[in-house]
View 1 (cartoon, rainbow, N blue to C red):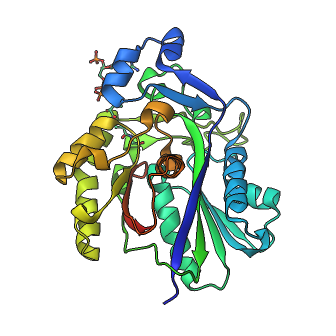
View 2: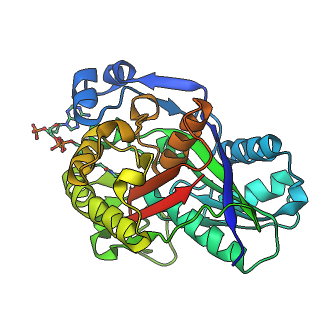
Length: 324
Ligand code: UT7
């Protein structure tokens, strides 16, 4: 079978940093509350760049870094829950601006598990195709979906994008079998951008989109119980013990969730890198942002095994072991 390799990662975040103290100026919250409950100190907020702008920067960085011909890209996937529009897809906007004429482009909506869903789709499609490269990006401008008067959500989220370049017919196989699941029956625990059905005809106004709403406690419970089980299934299916994994790169929603998962799978916390203090929860961008940060800090090396694990809206989860 053809090998598909993750070549490397790239990220782009907006310029503006908003601290917990900045937020406490505009809503009834405090650095102490946010930091102690989540580990978040700062987040990046986009002022006038939309999701496709952030994702385009990531794609350009990946092309430049790997010195590839844009015509060799056959697939561009953007995982996002905050697209520029319902249509065109954010990935189509990126594809158009890159002038990647040979690339099929589409978005996927799997919230914070989106990057893992995207990798899973891309690597499987690549084995059946002859194109050389795919780009998978997780990108979000969640600040446009949050209700800035709702402190229970507004303090948690941030904007950013990051992604990976995948090579087809490569020297190294990066992918092991993923454990990916959807729990649609729990979908109402985390909802954003919901629309109402038309109330009257002819309608008097445009359909409204509702802001982010989350039952934080329910999602917390879900994550701390389902994610370790998913990670264990991925470990067992691929017969790779947790001890063999160099880093566990988890969705950066809350340091307490990560601590609890580390304890449940009996692995030391220093194998769980965290950057929610800088970026907050960036949904689909969170796992690739962490990967790009690790790479920039020279923590990633050829031959290492990483386990990625995401959880969030859908509800969705995914655990993916990759080899660098
Ligand atoms: O990316 C998708 C996945 N999402 C997640 O993984 C999120 C999972 N959930 C969590 O991380 C936590 O549940 C939160 C961080 C969202 C909330 O932490 P919590 O310890 O579960 O707090 P809570 O929602 O139970 O609220 C506790 C108190 C409440 O006050 P009362 O009712 O006890 O008087 C809230 O009104 O804290 C209050 N509160 C705040 N206070 C200051 C809620 N938000 C804030 C705030 N600042 N921003």
